[in-house]
Amino acid sequence: MAFTGDLEHLNIVDIIQLLNATRQSGVFSVKGTKAVSRIVFRKGHIVGANHIDNRVRIGSVLVKTGAITIDDLQEVLRAMKTTDANRMPLLATLVQTGKLKREDALRGLKKLVEMTIVELMGWPKGTFMFDTDAVVVAPEGAQDLEVDAQMVLMDALRMFDERERDRSEGKDVPSLEALYSDVIPAEIIEEEKSDTSTITADDLGLSDLDRLEKRIPRAVTDVEVFDPVEIHRRKIKELLPGFSPAEQDAFFSFLRKSLANKAGPDSAKQAGKAIILFSDDTLIRHSVMSFCNDEGVLVFSTDDAQELDRIVSQCLLSARMPVVVFDNPATGGDGFSRKKVGDVRTQVREKFSSVPVVQFASAGDNDFILQSYQQGVQAVLPKPSREDRRETYVRDIIAFLEAFRTYIKSLQYGQDDADIFGRKLREGITSLRGITNPSDTTLVVLAAVSEPFERAVTLLVRQGDLTGERAIGLTSDKSMGPTPADRLKIPLAKPSVFRDAVEKARVYYGESGDETLRQFFTDIGKPLSPVILLLPIVCNSKVVAMIYGDFGKKEPAPVRTDMLEILAQQAGIVLEYLVFRRQAAKAAQKT
Image 1 (spheres, rainbow, N blue to C red):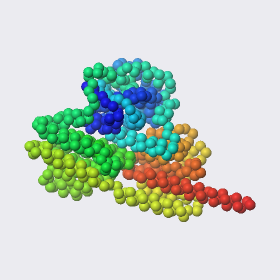
Image 2: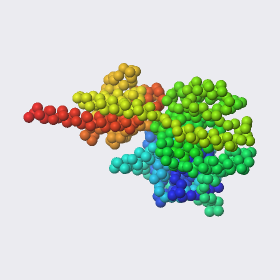
Image 3: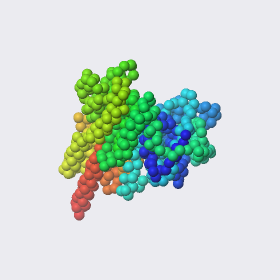
Image 4: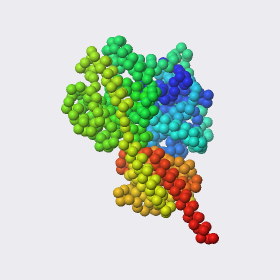
């Protein structure tokens, strides 16, 4: 079955969230005035995408980020042409041959999907089709590579907002396509254009190897209007088997009423939150995703401890304030046991002590409730049991979800952190006012960066490279203060995340597969998390220094990069004034 609709009535973000929440599989195609773009879903996760520009493909993304070389790409593509029709897709082939690490493959796929979504978010008009029958058929032995739709959305929204902010400030915002214009040779691009009638894996961002069971467009008689309400209705019937139509309709009416309250006056306050459900209850996952998404709150769900750890870290990296919600343990069996819940909950509390934790519990399970509070859980909510009170379950679960929604809306998170960052900013600006030596301006910013980060380095911009000046936490505990770092040098001859930050005088905060950064890690020791900060200090319209920061052997924590950027700007102003005074004094001496 295929569903079609218009972007004027449903925006891209809402559609992706719906397909994720309802765990849909199929190909989502969007046709605008420019071209056609596609995103491929498998059980709500994204397994591929194609950007409207032929230069922006998974291969070019991997080469651009330094994950592979252009020679690696061409070698694998040539080898794949000689194999049979059941060959594995490009990403899987690169991973299997050892030319690409699995984490780099996922990072490249995520970046491609992000850029595709950012492009589509800028389309005010267009038509779309979601084809549930165009299912990706992966060859046996292929790598299982997929990315979380909500995680990609989180970063795509941040990227889109940053670009729109820069445009509103009159800054030059290069097109995403321009970043890849010189990565892949023209002859490869022309090859990839050869067959556009069928959705190939090139279209999906996976190479030309995956096969789809049907082509699009299809006959008009096979197409229905894309109706989110009807999709939710079908999903509720699937999630409440054995309940009467009246009970299913009652739950659907509750969910529909919640969806109708979308974009309320308080929605802007909720936009910085993220709910992470540690649960295997599909009804709870679907319901919470549905009404929280429509409040502007992203929702992630998993029942895997390692995946939970990764999601929390990524939320903190993206300045989303996560709330981890644990479902109540099963009353029997080895699945979602009380021990598993307790162990994972302890792990979260120890690793992310500032992240609020909420626990669901069976009514009357007093021992578990008390244990939860003893382990630092912020709230315990009694969750109804389908087995114990089936006759009133639908009514009970509606009341429970309403209470949970109200609790999440009222939950205030991060106020203390905001106060701390604000105080640190004021302290930094006060310190800058008393400086008389130009070199001390970078020291103030270095100290400020070392507060949220475990390691910080001042890098001075020289002819052709960045040269280390001072560091905190690099060769000794950061409590020991600054130490010399003049042995460090970062070349700027080749394109890199460092050179980009210097040339554009723009803050960089995030992960990078940059080759120059990897070499820098060999010099200073690779941190536990690849998340870094590059904070330029500008004097007289030129970047004169860069403050580098990473989390060392710790996991990422919330960072107010905006306040660090303000401090760096103030440091640049002070530096300009001190340089001017020094130049004026020299001129006076000559006369």
